[in-house]
Image (cartoon, rainbow, N blue to C red; front, side, top):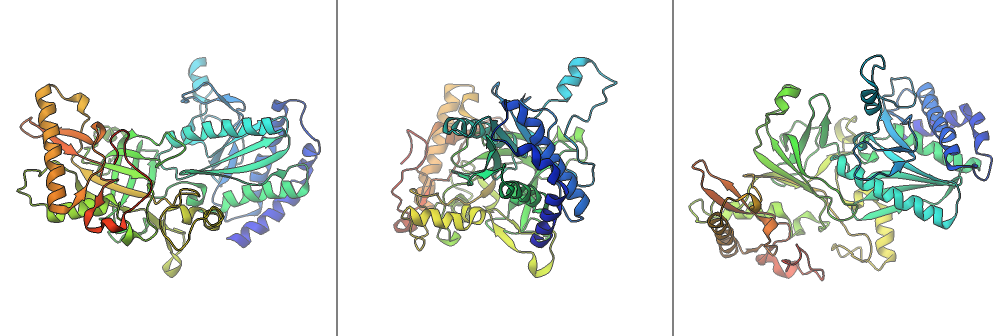
Length: 486
């Protein structure tokens, strides 16, 4: 694939050389003057890829509208240029709404042509000059916009962004607790334009997970829901294999989105096991589990990961008797583990490698180099807080589904629920030697039994420790929910 991509790069550069003339200047007179040359250049690259390659997976194309507001944005900010993944079989052209202009009123047509964060692959922020202040401003805007990409795209593992200041291009990668930026590519120089073309070609050829998307969380547009694979009881496996190593759930409700650039990027879904048959039946999905998807700090060796919620809940289910007074007051583990997927889902046999989704598998040598330069010890497999923290993509499905304390109907119900949670905490500590360490109002929930009685539910064992292995769990950092953390 890499060889085919490099051959295509040469063909593309040769085919669009006439467009390079537009970049032979120090800067454009106005920022907006650069939008059309840039979008025309990107579109021409897509046309050349389609003409010269039969193995490209997609085309990267800009939206027709530039300097535009995002329809579902929380702010009034305007995005300079947005890129979207297009079908390689279609004619390359600027993206616009698939809307019949002969029908509907003016307001409806305008709304149909608006840009949504759900559909954006990457954003480009443009500034007229290559000054330090313009570069800082472009980067700051890109960070704000990318946070909203994470918020709206629930299958995004990391995101791409570009800044173009004057004609200096930087490529940025936004991940869980890190932002990486490339060196400057001077678009006035042939070498800089070549790098720009190479990037667009590789994005067109590479597997979808290299674009930052999660192949184990799939957006079913025709149904209007999410299809989510969850590893079975800590057993990671490739999502593309029919070997019963993952459970698949369907969700029409996202209760927590990853709306922050830094941290664990936690997302929570209400989901059921049965695939809906139509967009109408999606509305009636029976919610059987809550799925939590996050990037917590972890040990590289899964067997040495003592702060693992799946391991804790597995032990609790194994050791706690069903007759216990705490029965039903802690989550039942339905599925969970470290997220893995096939390296190349198009390959077959022994080449179908399985990759664990973690910081090191994402950025490889960069992770090693940064942590070594910052004093990180590669032999010690604990996270290095003075470098890039080592995080692992984990997913867990539990039941029953709890409700927040604010929905209780009386003080008496609150007393019952908190008592149940504290009884569960004590029983788990005594029977399983697992200490929760993060008791808070957010981690005590409730549900109603068939008789209508409330039952307390102690959730979120992410920060718990197994006292049987306490000597292996020492961390200098404190963790949990302020002011309840221990």
